[in-house]
Length: 179
Image 1 (cartoon, rainbow, N blue to C red):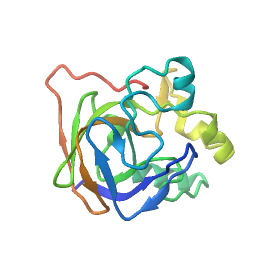
Image 2: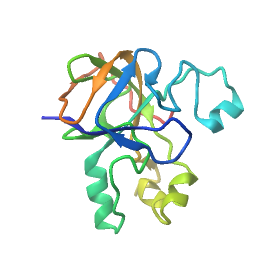
Image 3: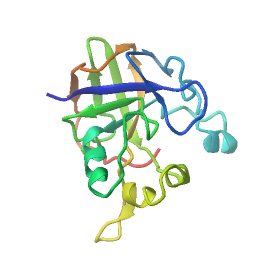
Image 4: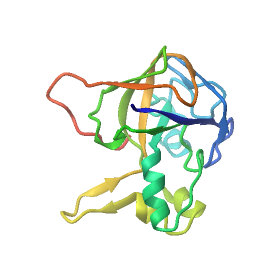
């Protein structure tokens, strides 16, 4: 059953986030006490371009299975290291279509907006890691594996062990693109 492994937040714009026992997710804003919470974009490079853009990156999720894959290549990562708010297991986040609803625990509903676009901060965090989370496949298509971004439709508490239910949007499905 898909579930939450860990939750994390950080009040400042640090690369990694601090793992906590529980996070409070606020409707239309994001994770309470997290630097990326807000109605408008909070990612620094996007703020520099246009601070009035809607925040499509309120809550960041990564699947724990990615950490297992990266460990095979020598990258030992722990929860919060890649800046995720929610670390999941048992759900192929990167395969979800845009606008999928993730019901997390008893109250929270998140709408998938797209893929996290990995940046140079990942390379600064661990040399060689960027090339493992973003690369071109055999067909020459760019593959991004650093998690998904969501907006908050309904808030509440999220903690490790919470079950995640997936509600797919109506057909036709739209593949995830970077946001």
